[in-house]
Image 1: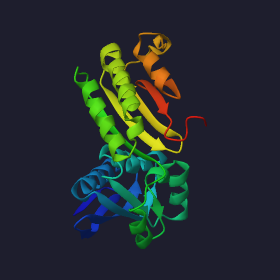
Image 2: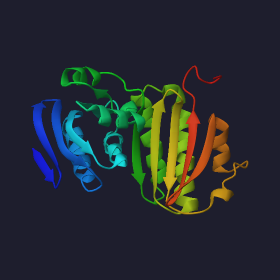
Image 3: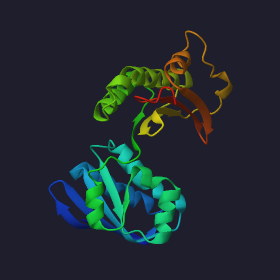
Image 4: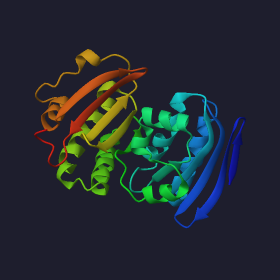
Length: 247
């Protein structure tokens, strides 16, 4: 497999039954980011474990490095989708760390080390699901989050996490009346559940009152907040994992 875009090339340089190695060369830019996303996503879907040689990659647009964690998250995240980058020069490696990409997608100096990192739990694991404005969206959200808790061995959190996700998605599709993106992330802070909708405004109307969905969210989570985005808003709740309740 090989794919090209003016300024960037993606090549399949190694294939095993449950692993493949891709090599990127050229410029990672706004125009070529889609090619990288497509190639990495397809490889993750095909084999689940992917190594990417970025020794020939040059970055011309800093936000483009987010294609790597985004692809992993869209494909289901750990443990089903595992991605490790290797061979980055000093400048690219510094950018990957500064942009916190390496927290979700480990960075290795060489392929041998990269293969070892595939078997390790990264510091941060995440997955996301895009939902249409449909009455079935909260039900799909509950199943999605319950599955993530099972995969990440968070059985003690599953009930609260499913409840929070359902309430936040319901708030987006019923009250904001838009599609939304549901994202879950597990790191040292705990389990964060974020729902982003696509309706501007409404920030001042979000108050956790008794009987309101956000009251439930505020009750079971350690904390929650809402922030504006360029095309709507994002509501995030944090649930502590075992042993974090008093931190």
